[in-house]
Image 1 (spheres, rainbow, N blue to C red):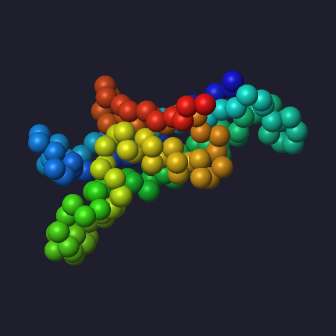
Image 2 (spheres, rainbow, N blue to C red):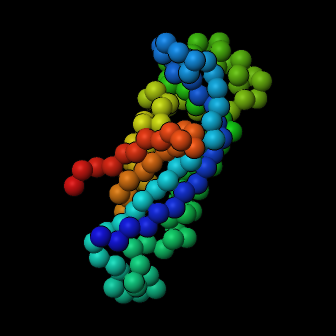
Length: 141
């Protein structure tokens, strides 16, 4: 199995609605997305001969994903009052509603699925919430 790895980072805020602890409060992280892509065989023809995928293509996709979350507040759909969302928008804040609790575990799966949907040979996505704490998602083969 040939495996490539790349990463990108973004800064965003989130909170865990219904959580009994300090993460229930709005707070921020410097998130790092680490992506492993691979396959059993290298490409055998064309300009990408001898490669799993062009590193530039992989890096571009991961960077675009990170950039789409950068400097935003990510929240689970339905956990903020409509008036709160309207007030944030009125103040010019960027909000991203997601259909899941915005944990490192759920980000890892969502990012995995987003990259796979682009046709990338994704094996695993790891999301670091802090330099010491991360969660990974991969599909058992």
